[in-house]
Image (cartoon, rainbow, N blue to C red):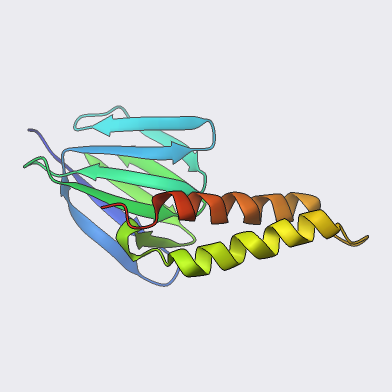
Length: 134
């Protein structure tokens, strides 16, 4: 399997760097995949799962926040506000976040930022869906 270099970075640190065979990401317009020798591309990333397939077939799953993706000359860059391995997602914390978001939306106080509350609920539900995925 032909490979390309992948770097995943947050504002705080370089989180991951390795040669990979395939990447699938959650773009704001839907899922997309990248193989070696992909044409140059830039995409906005939404909150979701980043799948990385290693040359030997092993798969790694990352839970990423919003950010940008760029690929050029067999180098891919994922620049996101948050990232963690999916198996490290804390299900109890995600459940608490879901409950808080649902409560805010149900009570709907006058000063509620509905879009922000819906986004928080979506993130919590996504984290619950992928908690423990490896």
